[in-house]
Length: 170
Image 1 (spheres, helix red, strand yellow):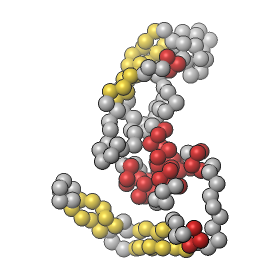
Image 2 (cartoon, rainbow, N blue to C red):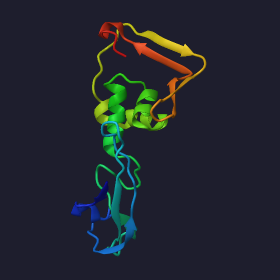
Image 3 (spheres, rainbow, N blue to C red):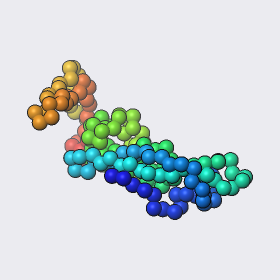
Image 4 (cartoon, rainbow, N blue to C red):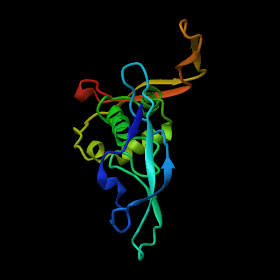
């Protein structure tokens, strides 16, 4: 899917706020977004590089950016939020959320920590905390019959924490 910036505020210099009038060049980043159904969408954002026309501004050039995709970001804010919600609200482990969203473990862990709407929400207090499904040993792989790809079915280590007072929710 090819995208262009429609927001005129994206051509305002992030340092001084002056609107640029002269294009320096272009860039085509491919920010990642949450999957849509079973398939992944691939975005190609055709954005422009601008010269800052303010003489006193230390920044000479910049690229367009919007709130959902800051400059230099490889993931959309929507994908980071989805990763944080998967761990916090859906009871998924960081590892499973990373697999489901095709992300790495550190990205999902940072998204869980950084997503304010996820981490600032109050949690119910747990009176008892139990450990469930502790597994150690060899990983298990199975071949997908339709694609012939090998999929990791069981990881080497996995521990789930359960709160019996909350109906066994992880």
